[in-house]
Image (cartoon, rainbow, N blue to C red):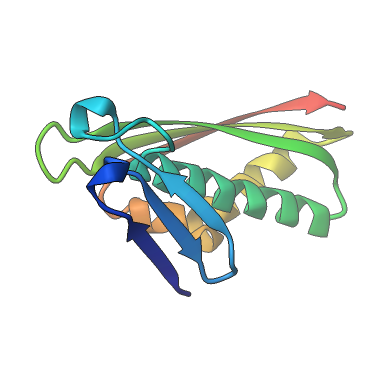
Length: 141
């Protein structure tokens, strides 16, 4: 996996562009207080969003492979950070809202645990420094 992050100089404040190995562009920036212009997500926000995407991807794939009629999956994430540098994530809560037809809570719980314990590289990696809590609810489509 590869990625290139470019900062284009002081005229751009702290704005940066990441070009992923798959050819996608992601804009990042800092707050005005940190010298940014608020033109993009903060890098740590992207780390949290990537973790949510990784685990939601797992959830949907596991449920589909189990022939469950999943029609939607949302994960709401909240992260607490250390007060001093490096301001790592210390606690992350993930709440999944999974929508589908005749979805059994046991199947959703199993998919959530499989993602958390075996498949989601992002959350497993962050779990080395942060406590991660999971919860879920099932909604009818």
